Image (tube, rainbow, N blue to C red):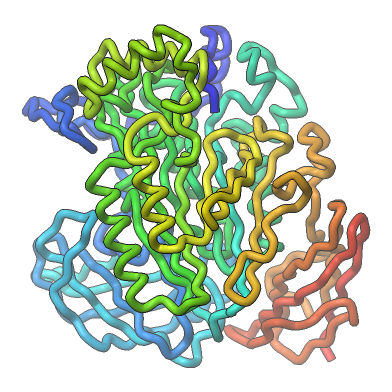
Length: 592
């Protein structure tokens, strides 16, 4: 999206709202003065200057992660990757534990089948163990936290990854998934007119909940979107970057990364996450690098995953620039925000697609997702009649990785004038790979608008933002599949996504659909009533999770029980309902 310069008054107002704790920061500058380009070959930044939160999220477990979960059937094997960080490991214990949104407490031991020396394409370590475990056949279908313990050099070590394993009864040939993008935790653009950064709209400020001391009101727009996604209950979610704002001041990644990581755990379905430009800026005043934060919180910048035999997806980093190209100037000014994939990542994508092609069935859906859309290239979009555009590409081609300071300054000027979409290398090469390997679809964000393009048999979808600047509304895109093809991806023509708010009216605060429980959904009751409302123009099939006291239950006729099992003296039910457009239904559950 076109970069908006914040005026000083707005910056000072927002800064007054931000939390700050000196304890959240590591040493900002290294006394050793060791130089390092971070992600890239630049030598403009010191190595020991990440300003990473002390509570690092990615430690010994490097797969599966919160951002790269594993989806497995009961009875299948799962190979974990554990970095023992130089220690000789033994006496392994692996468990699945309830997530933070579950009212159940049962844990499940995963028997260890084998342990071998492993390696990782993204984590540089010589002490990675591939630990293969078995998913027991009695584990209920649900999303779980993963806990791994082992003895390393005489010390008991335990690590945990939240929401990182989804256990299934069976893979669905006709599955569903949802695309979210541009959630922008910490964005000041949410509280008023984005074209007038000094403005403040009370209704938008309420929905933003910017640094509200009450967590239930903080980032309310995002919490509402996640509630709706949970009700849709897709088989998985992909999130294509710009989780943060990252452009207010050089310290904000400290708390924005922490906030985004926490709030996204309100999802009760697996989510696969790649970075956007706002997540990866290198903020020069304290030499902090968003790419380092990403590795500490979310792990790899690119990866792939399977949904059984029916889908293969690649998530990649389309803001793959040298560190100097990603560097900020002071606070709000950044020279590069458009897309690029460099040769190392492109080679990995090519190898992954080739390996998948060796075993893929003919009906497999193959998808790629990233922040920027490779169809939209600045070399094509920027007018060649502009002499400064001609000058820019001449300078860029002379020194493109990293760019020269003069090129960066001119690129920023032209970016403000024309915006930046896919700004750098390998857009066509990436498209050629997708055509070669018969990729089905390509998912993107960045522009904060909806767009659908079909080209060479590939469906390219760009989805509006969850941030309140989304056009034509704040929303997300849901996909359904049938017989190995994408059967539905539009809520409304031409190519629009589902609005989070009724009629797209953000200021109203009214959700497009929701479920209102009469009593607390905590497993303490033998009866429950849930009013499920659909304010959209189309019927919606929603899943209502219910925790009851253990027992045998009957439900009202307007729903079907998809899951029903007892655990810890409680009964867990999932009830699927189809709610007609502009209507509501009341679901009642009663112990027999």
